[in-house]
Image (tube, rainbow, N blue to C red; front, side):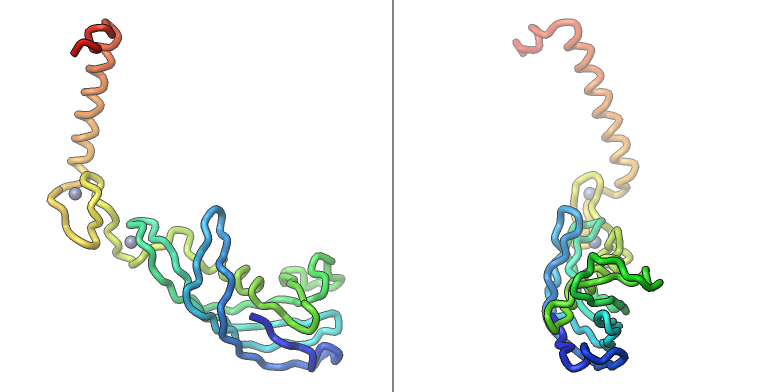
Length: 188
Ligand SMILES: [Zn+2]
Ligand SMILES: [Zn+2]
């Protein structure tokens, strides 16, 4: 998604409004790509600064996330404001004091909005996403997805603990046997 700023780029102070709808590249977040299944809408104003173009925008879109409790994928609507400075070489530090504004690449006479949207989007995605606030997740005992069906384990917490203790006892017993004679175990 990009905007043509050829009309203002030679006139510092000149600005143009824009409204673009289109797809944004998937986000690479750590080892997982976050899919952006629906078009994004980016509306705002681009202003020529002489050195480049300053863009302020409101972004609306949809992000496909994985629920941190039940591992199902779900779509989350997001809306946020963002700003960025578009210059031909974004790696050159700016002389003025607007240091907290990120710089992005001005490609020819176009501001390519994807990087700016992705940068701000990452800050607007919850660290531990939930498909719904009351997501029940999985049963600790039988592994059923409790959002889809209640399981037969009436008190998952206590049963899991009890099961865990039995398992531990059994392993300890086997450990003792193994210590005394391994050959007997093989014959069984
Ligand atoms: Zn969930
Ligand atoms: Zn269960």
